[in-house]
Each structure stands twice: as structure tokens, then as C-alpha cells.
Amino acid sequence: MSKPKKNPPVEPPAEDVGPQRCGFIAVIGAPNAGKSTLVNALVGAKITIVSHKVQTTRVPVRGIAIAGASQLVFIDTPGIFAPRRRLDRAMVEAASTVAGDADMVVLLVDAQKGVSDDVGRILRQLANVKRPRVLVLNKVDRVKKEQLLALAADLNKRLEFPATFMVSALTGSGIEDLKNHLALNVPEGPWHFPADDLSDVPERQLAAEITREKLYERLHQELPYSATVETTAWQDRKDGSARIEQTIFVERESQRSIVLGEGGRTIKDISTRARKELTALLERPVHLFLHVKVQEGWSNDPERYRNMGLDFPKD
Image 1 (cartoon, rainbow, N blue to C red):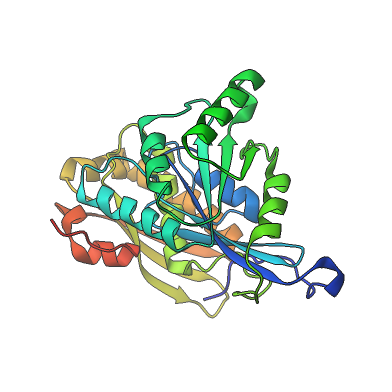
Image 2 (tube, rainbow, N blue to C red):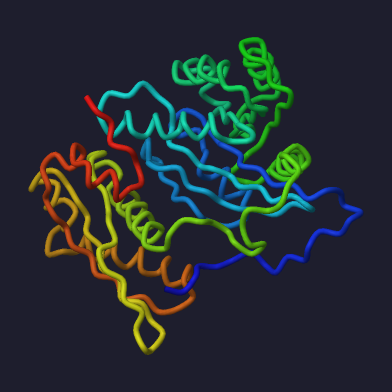
């Protein structure tokens, strides 16, 4: 398989820009705080999917950026919330594990929502994580300055943050200041990835995630949370194109009918949207074939969790 788009060629850092640094930075927060949008903005390319549907990010996704002599490995994590289902528990456990293992932790808070129950829960968990942490208030372009200052003070009173930033991940405001701060504070050491890598996400997984994003875009209100996509076949053809087959798993026949749509129009629209983005990502023609399969209780199937890269939580 060919590689997706990469960073522009990067020259080895000159000695006068300081020591070489590399760090893993966990981006955590409540669902829909804008973590995926922030990671994409920091990397400068789309490496993780974005949706208005809560808990869109299901597994940690790593995006890689270069800032001066520093390589920054951002880890987009599932939202941390009070889990109710097995899939919820797997996602929250994955996010918590990443936060504990990273070199630095960025807590992203939606400035419009403030200190929700989920944010309060994360603050209590972070108190036990002995890693340098940074507070980032997102969507600040939608909140008055007085409210932002009060929110920052409240959060720092609950848990001290050595640095606080105010950004709009969507518009890019404040992103460079945050990136530069992280670049100066990750540990000294060699880079872990080639200089032109944008992500370490396998192409099959990335392709499935793009289709899931288009699925949510098209059926945000109609489709239940319990739907997933797997890339089941990938063929690199002699003409340079890629033939990709994917399966959309749902839990009931009624959900299958929703995804297919009348006369198959909905699944055709989803396929067209996903194919266009995959063609741009891979920089070659893509032939995409989507299938919809009913698998009752797939969210309790250990194999589905392994395919998604999650640990299967026990009862």
C-alpha cells in the first residue's frame, strides 16, 4: 500500500536551535471538547476523524509534528466520561492509560461548557498522574474574555496547571503558541519517527475511520452509536489504483435499512464521500466497495475490539 500524505522534507535541526527533543503528548478531555480538531490543527493535516456525534474517537490516534528541533507526537484520545456500556469502558480505559504513559498531558476544555461533570472527573484523575500538564481552553472565540479568565482561574484552583492556553482549534487561533510551548518542554532525546511522517495509523484503519466519519456525517441523527467499520480487503492494482472493501457493522436489521437507504441511495452517497477523501489522502484512484452486515451485540464481541485496537473489558 502507498503511504498517505507526509510532512514536507525536514532538515536535521541545526545545533543553534537547541537540543533535539521528542515527546508523546496525550490530548484528553470530555466528549466533543474538540480534541480531534485540535490534534489535526497541531499536526497541520487531517489524521483523525471529526464528527458532531459524541465519542467519535474510539481508539488513541497518534499524529506527528515537527517544531524546530522537537518532534511532537500528539495522541488523540477517546473522550473521558462516565461509562455505561462495555465499549464505553474500553474507550475510557484506553484514554486513561495513554494519559498515564505520555510525557506530557494536555487537558482540553470546551470554554462554552465550562466545568462539566466529565471535566470534574478528569481533574480528579489527573491529580494522580505525575506528568507535566497543560490546560487548553477551546472555542474561545465564542466566549467573552471575562468568562474565559474566570474559567481558567477556576480550573487552576481545582488543579494547578503550569501553563494555560486559549485557542480556537477550528480557526487555528492560538495554535502556534501552544505548539511552541510544547516543543520547548518535551524531553530531550532522539526523534522516534521519520521526519516526514504525519501519523503511525495503519492505512487500513485510517480508511475505515474515514468511512465511519462519512457515515456519521450522513446519518448523525438517525444512526445509533453502535455502528463500526472495518476494512476487510485491500488490493493495490497494476494501474496504480487501490481496490478497498469495507464492512459496516450494525446491530439490527432496521439499522441496516437506514444505512442502505431507499434504493441504496444512502450507502452510495456515503461511499462517494469516503472515496473522494481517500483518493485525496492516498493521491491515487480508489475503488471503494461498502457492505452492511447485521451482527447483533457486536459491541460485546472481543474480535471487534481487537480489530479496533482496544482491550476487551471483562464484566
